[in-house]
Image (cartoon, rainbow, N blue to C red; front, side):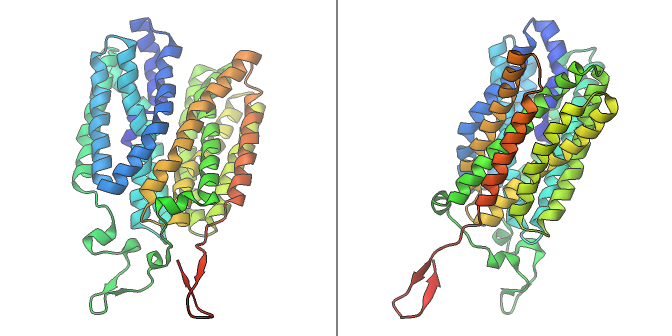
Length: 408
């Protein structure tokens, strides 16, 4: 989760200026690689879910880190923008689909009663990486006399050196595969019974069964809406602040403040998930994003820019933690990878459309003022979908003996 940020939008933002100056490519063309990859991710997510379900997280995540490092380092040798789209696009697809699905699913397999807090650790690591990699990229460029090619190369090497070994060696599919139980629950070796085992009470749904429930599709659509807000604000936030007369340095610093807020939010929302119903937490997360989006309209100076960025970042922390936990709580652990593979294209679609929609509004009106109410409306629709998405319950089947039922 930390090293997937080697292909984050905040990382490529550091490269836009030097790459455009050196190659003559337009800035729009360079950042367009991220949008194209977002669309491609919609089709990759089901495959990633299948690989996770069929071969386990070691194959998916170690393979992802191997390809991610290779693609990023290979940008050093590109000589045309089409090749850049292919290589950075591969990295961005891995950022959006396999790592997001695989990491959260592994945590959901190992934790049940403390799933919220455990998943929040992923959000914190992502936030740290989000703040680290833009700085790391700039340091690498400075160390190589401004050579952006060498910066990409060493970022790719760092993925191989740090992230690949643990995913290749230490990842274990589930606690049951090594004779353990989730949450560190002790098993009595004589009776082979686990006491206080929250995992034993989870209802397990297959992908086919989950797809027949309205709840899965409502949650998928809600996920697309909240990530529509996420990407729309993230991509255009710095430009919006500049339009408000805020300096480039302050606008960039606001992104760092937002990353800090995301880390704090990951902890906060994870703590709430273990204490109140997950559906309530998800609705609060969506409502938070929609409400704070309107606060951007009040920003007229550095102080408010930092405050709103931090508060919005807290909401973004919820998006890293809450949706995967909700899916695990609703449908169990056994087919979670495959289920996430089907619902994640909605997230990728929302991410791909969010930035484009905000950009179109600006191009047509010469202002971002219309974008933030649009995000609020999207959040309200998401809240309604989440509230309506009640936890599915398997129907009781009447047995052949009068008065008896068993659960299917």
